Length: 374
Length: 127
Image (cartoon, rainbow over the protein chains, first blue to last red):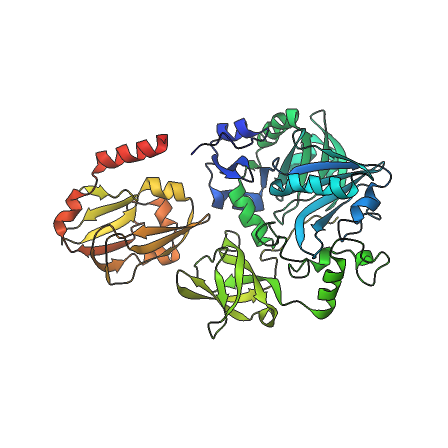
């Protein structure tokens, strides 16, 4: 298989040196696992600390006095009152209320916002921003300029504190400029594993030096995309393009919590983002289907795309993400179900290789999140 | 113990003293699959060559295990139910999948021998 058309992150050579198995992902040649293997990489992250290369994700800077106000016209999230030094989860919606992408937004102060968007969506997100708010603020794509590392797990804070003592004071979703090894970085206390940890935006040219320094710490192992997926699934976190897309709204995706109170129908700055009417109508009148957690009652993993039926064998939904949870010690899934079936502990059946596998609608996260809230 | 035979789908076969044949997947196959978390074993019934007799679920994906020859499945490895990781830890031993009676006992000898299989995986690794 040729990989010449794939992009490479600044850590590509390091992945090969570490013996990673590389796969194409969102146009990049990325490590799916290292010699340790997905299962042990997953467990290592939950027990100590894992280092993930997430440089394929898109980093974008917005600058200008109107940047916060402008970005609010594209997301159902409170950006105007996002404090300096804080980060918030958001999503771009379309005119039907569907989700174009999900993202993190941080307020750097001095009329500067810092966005992290999904790799597969970054070019279209940039075009979307330029089209709608390009005349209201300066939009700078940092796709080639900066790398992104995630250091996740209970020992992440111990490790990063050795390089910068002040990061220990940060709490979940705080965002700071931090000097690491003499390099100016942006550090957030967040991630996508359900564990405490940090995401570190570092200039591309310095990324390998920082990654090597972190990997030299005894608690840290390099972790691939395979474990990243099982970790986020156990944490009940959505993966764009699988658990949500342009055909699903935040209400259907069970992401109402992410719509800030001031932007809701009864809020101080209600609406004013694409698809607001559709989303508010769904919030008021209900939706036909919703994303839920699902726990198979057998050991068989139930994978994305599996049809879900009721006791009578009628189709009532499908699985959007599924696999095996190493910490949970069993299979787990998320799926979209007809809302008549979304109550906790409702039995439903997935069709796996022609056989019915019973699952129970389950609360999420499947494994408790352990964010550091101070 | 007789010598092993192999299929291009990375299964190994070993003819037992009673003429039945034990089947598993090779070290190369388990390494490519990654951590095995579940094995769906065949029913005790006849399968045709090439039929999907078993399924291996790794943390990454599901993969079929195909019946290497026409025959009747006599026994499956009960240990894989609770310890699917045996497929990774001991693929040629305790990680065996099932035992079957081939319709044509001579057909086993026509499958790849160790040298031919080693050449096959070397060629695949270089591809």
